[in-house]
Image (cartoon, rainbow, N blue to C red; front, side):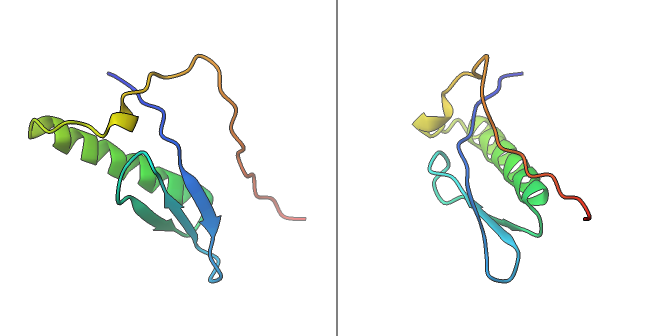
Length: 82
C-alpha cells in the first residue's frame, strides 16, 4: 500500500468547530467538531478521492505524488480537564 503526505491547514471557527483545507487536494473543505474528528474525515475523504482517481484512470493531482518522509514533526492537541 502506498502512502502520501498530505499538507492540511486547519482553523477553529467561531462556533467551535474546525475547518480543514488542503492545497494538495483542490476543493477539499472539511468541517468537524474536534481536530481529531476533522483530520479523520480529511484522511477518509482523501483516501476515497485517490481511489476514485485511480479507478477511473484519472491523473492524481501532482502534489499527491510525494513519498512518506522518514522523519517528520507534527503538533497534536491533547485535551484534558483541569
